[in-house]
Image (tube, rainbow over all chains, first blue to last red; front, side, top):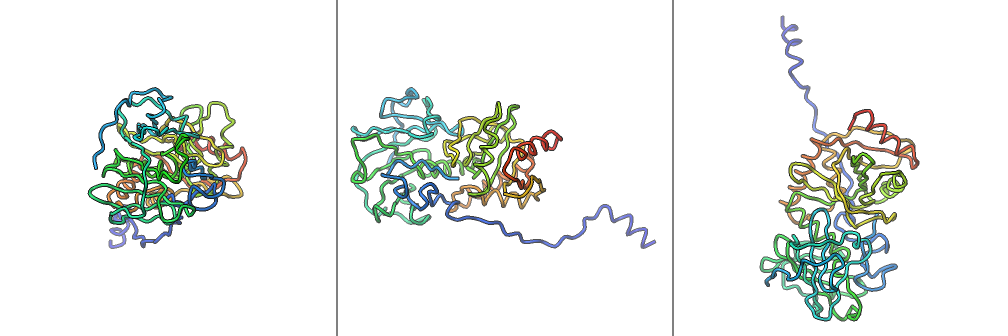
Length: 60
Length: 311
């Protein structure tokens, strides 16, 4: 009878699943718009940029 | 500091030299030169987003002046060499730096607390004042939208948005190097397909729907377009040896999307709002990991996945 009760109750119960910690990669410099990839380094005057105000954020 | 409503915002797309307007993700942004001799302009791919904007949601004035390293404000966020955010008297102060200009910011945005009005001050000595100037350039343009949208159920994601010939939108999300530009180029030649951007897509909830919007911020393909679409699928992009889809648990998908988005990390409520937005989106839109090999078969794999009714 115990076995029958257990079988009857099984479908309504979800099995316990141990919490899993998953690490997600964050690239801080990209995430905060702290770089300019076209120029290769931070700042709009770098690389191909010649003066302030000509960088349009062409990154990928 | 006050931010009076801009005069003469009902201008043509071409503008009159001193007043211009953009429309990005249904946000109208007005830009007016405050200094008499200043000729403000949008350039590059911003030109495709010029708009008439009688009532801009964001109003920006630009001026020449002299800037000093001191903002007289409390530091809120330091993004390293490129920009710092401070707060003073209820306003935000965004300073922009470049190593060539040292500790003096070449540009400063002073914005009200909901990021709807602001003044851009350009350090006169660093510019040729006889030439048209682009106050709304990177990274000010994106940072302004990041902060504005974070208070209004919106977010910029690091993604490639593609609308197929039926109007269905596919959002390919990934860090730099994940394959966004490659994906955009693979789809670009197909008839009826629009690339909303190969690098930056805005997601916004509007009238009960979440739309993905094109932006002028592109990657190496330089592909971008104004426009929007409902999202058929979100695909977390990664390079592989074949074209395979893998399910992602919702919590993991939210985390992956957050890590591939541009958030106002100093603003807890704003970050929580973006997380909530992603949770809502993922109750309506399937999200899969898409491992792909560069080639037309990758496009066909997505189309086949959609044809099978998975979308």
